[in-house]
Length: 176
Image 1 (cartoon, rainbow, N blue to C red):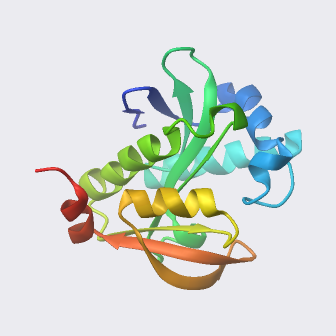
Image 2: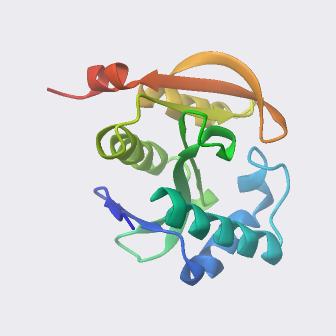
């Protein structure tokens, strides 16, 4: 399983060992406001961990725990998966962070590394991300990543704003 690193984060494939930090993240109603609209129960978190481990086994990629290098704490989570969890759909990236880490640039730092993984390691022809239309902070990260608004769509049982970029667009956003 692939571990990714950035200047301040280590992205580790989610395992049972991440339960405590992941549940603390996912049980925060404000964090989950634009994800599922409700905080996770412990059972929800265990189910998510099991789904994630199965995807890592099947696809070789899925969700990572964002571990802050300085503290060793789980401060967020993010993914490269398939939109709608269906391999017939394009690759998707997404993220969430603990509230005490909002506004520090961790989302874009992790998003750039996950996009690099999708385009360079997986050779994805395109990468998309979705968010609730009200989630301005997440849409800003998508735009900073180089994605453009592609319209709206019904994903994960909600109406979502869809952003995306092609591999060529990704190359155009990278420094020479």
